[in-house]
Length: 226
Image (cartoon, rainbow, N blue to C red; front, side, top):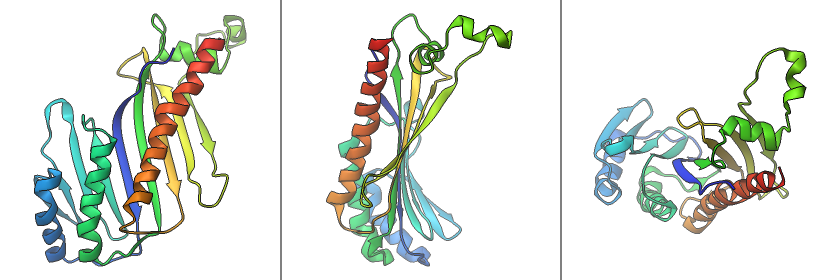
């Protein structure tokens, strides 16, 4: 069976109509959210600014970027769960949306990356070859050399205009041969009010269920059948 998925990265891009940010407004936002959200540094960038936490043990870091047409939340290798992440997004948007003049998020992109182990005594490459592509040794005779399966990509369009679309990568993981790297990049194109925290939180939970639940169930089913 597929192992329990472990999230290594979350990225949320909240797209809005272009805004000319002033340094004063951005610093006001930083002053209001730095303590509650754990941001230690304020770095000016062309058209905006980046807030980030000091790098912790294991390389974990949290970043918040204000660009001309988007707000980007990024967490890499942090131990905090989805609930903490959604509360942080709510805390920031509650302050930033009115201060920066952002009434709507016209679209959202949610990326989640997880690592999941494959059955013991098997590599991720051999698992994909055996269960997904069904490649047998005799199939490779014509190639006259061994082959290693790297991965596959799957697109899941929304069934309705208001649904999110999911673009999925399932690949071998270079840091651990006995694991798979799963990535879901979900896109939501129906505009929402910038303070509609329930809607944005719901989209993040949908991605969590898709990559951490449905994808691993799909792979587990292939393993059981193979």
